[in-house]
Structures are given as C-alpha cells and as structure tokens.
Image 1: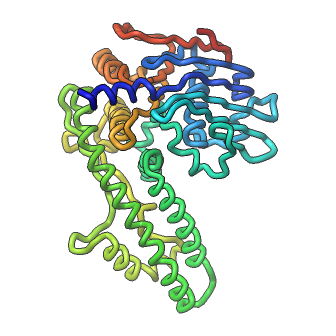
Image 2: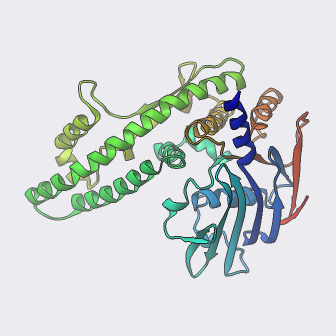
Length: 372
C-alpha cells in the first residue's frame, strides 16, 4: 500500500507547470500552462502546434527533433530567441532556460546556473516525443533506429551517454587513420592503439542496448497486443556476433579480420554505429510486409513502452508529447491510446479533440497566439 501511495505521489509531481516562448518560430511572446493529465493543443494546420511541442523537446534534449540548426528555430524577424520552462519532479520545482542566438552558440541554464555541455542537460527533464516522422523508426535507415536507442537510454543512464560520446570521438580518430596516406605498417600500428579503446566502449554500449531492448520488448508486447486487439510484436537487436565468443572477443576477432577491407574503404566497418533493430509482427518483418498504419502503431507502441521503462528506471514518468497522433488511428485505437495516456502528463497536438470521457485541458493555438 505504501509503495502504491509513493508511486501515485511521484506521478502527480512529474509535470510541466508552464512554458514561456520568446521569438521562437512563429511565437513572438507566448505563455502557456499545463494540467497534470491530458493537454490538447488545438488548432488548424500551420498555426504553431508542432512548434510548441518542439520547444519542450528542445528543453529536454537540447536539440530539435527535426534535426535543424538552432538559428532556423529563431523567429525570422529576430536575432535571439528564448525558451523558459518550469516543471516539477520528485526532486522539486526546477527551471530550464534555452537561449538561441543567430550569431553565437546556444546557452543553457538549469535553475539559473549555466550548463556548459548538453550531457548535463539530458535527463533533467525527461520527455518521450512522437510525431508523424517517427515512422522513420520502422521504415527508414538503421541510423534512425540507433538514434532511438541512444536518445532513449541516455535519458536515464548518464554512463551510457558518456560512453557514447567517448565512442564517437574514438571512432572519428580511427576513421581519420584509415583515410591517411601512410604506409600499411604505420596504419596497422596506429589502429592497434585505437581499436582496443573503441572495443571497450563498444562492448559497454552493446550490452546496454541489449538489456534495454530485452526489457522494453516485454512492455511493448503487452501494449501492442492491447492496441491491435491481439497482434504479436517482437523487438530484437541486430548485430554481428559469433555465438562461441563474448562480445569483446568477437569484436576483436572481427576487427583483426577486416583491417585490409577497412583501409580500402576508409572507414570502420564494425561496432554499434553499424547495428540495427528488427521489428516483427506475427513473424512478419515490419519494414517490408506491414501497412503504414501498422508501422505507425509499432512506433507509437515503442514510445509508450519507453514511458513505462523510464518510470521503472528513475521512479517517475517522463512527459509524453504526441504530435498529430490521431491521423491514422481508428476509433478503437484512439480510445485505447487515450486510456493509456491519461495516467501521464500528456501534451497532444490535434486539429480537433476526439470524444472523451476523461478530463482534459485545452490550449488553443492560432497563428502563434495561445488562448486558454
């Protein structure tokens, strides 16, 4: 009973209180407040609904989910932009401020203290974001699926984020060696200095990803089964590993056998930067054999599963951001989704609100102006 009361208390505390935008895309000066549960951002297309959700994601990750440059986020007629978000977690009330400038790098403050690295920001305000672009998680290149892994795990595991940053730095150095015009012997000598360092990071990253996907698959299977009325989902990490060897030993063996090919191509062929995730529904590969609606459902399920996974890891739910989520969901799936989302603070953009029995807050958006 005590555990249930504590968990309920945590869920109530994990919420955004208010958001202030200044010269952020089409918002000149906007202020918005949020309720604990369902919040609908309502308006016609191209009014600023997605921009509002984007600003919250920016406050969490430090980057736009659209993979655009910071200066593109600033209002066309302004030189600077500011995002200020006040929120509550189990640790109390906090603030994040993001300052964007067309002439310089962005500046970040947490509780009025300057943050020098994005790694210090990630995990302060945890959010899970879904948009129509999330279909890339299923349909597009492995890089999109690795990005899902890296952003997801980094929100609750700082060590993973540090290993990832370290890995990318070593990988860049190793690729530079492979591109050099030095003799074969010199390259081999240099590669043998960097390769063990790369393998050490790679082993830790792969192990974290395997553990993450093994746990999240179990959550995703239950949610997917409920949303689809009985379809079976599998989520597996795809990487080259010989069963007889450990990850570390296998990576070392693969590197030793591929030095010549890597030098010919000029880049590193082995490691977590080349791995993938395979999604299947009823044993059918989702990338090739499922409809777009089914693919969209899988992407949504993975985001909902991430909510539960992060809660298990850090003891409080992230904020759930859903951009244009209803467009390809039938009434059954819409109702199931709303039932799931009502337990979180959820911010949903839409052109109209579906028929609901749940309480909700409405945020009207028209041409960058907010009314509540």
